[in-house]
Amino acid sequence: MPRLWSETIEAHRRDVREAILDTTAALVAEHGLRSVTMAQIAERTGIGRATLYKYFPHVEAILIACHDRHVEAHLRQLTAAREGAEDPAARVHAVLAVYAHIVHAMSRHDLTELAAVVHRDEHATRTRRQLHDLVRDVLAEAARDNDIRTDIIPGELATYCLHALSAAADLPSKAAIDRLVMLTSSALRAAPGKASRRR
Image 1: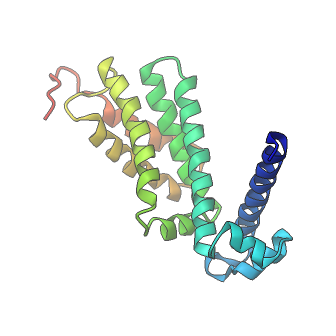
Image 2: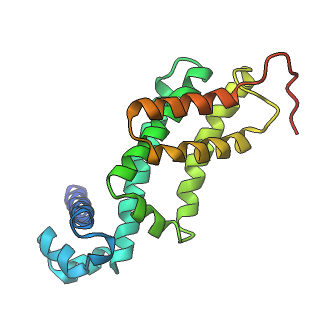
């Protein structure tokens, strides 16, 4: 098969897959997570059910793909925040702030239930690990520069930060989210006059 033709087919498949995911997300927003069927998705996307089944075996597989797409977009946002900051301390603040606002936005767009369904599966372990590792690496870099406390290992601090910032889902405003980020960031700083001791 000629390369150009192969690339054209692959691009078409990507477009169809993205259309399926977009349609499913819209149907979930309109009718709720539990009400969406393969027949609805096929009809709204404008493809036959047989074609839909060539891409996904069932609704849950589409929901998982939707969730993966959100997670990948969030990881790109966090990576951009990390790379856009000038020094390790600024990177910590930027990543924590972006994550808190992502959590808040997800709670406002009916993505929390989707995440809960997907997170019941071991499938979610990989994406949670990617998020945790990104935050851990940012904290480790700041610890090497003595910008944050070193008496607790970066992996534990990352777990603390992610759990603390999950409260952003329930906050009413950007100002409240920013205060949560400041509170979380302040807990990362070593107490003045105390030697840092890793346990």
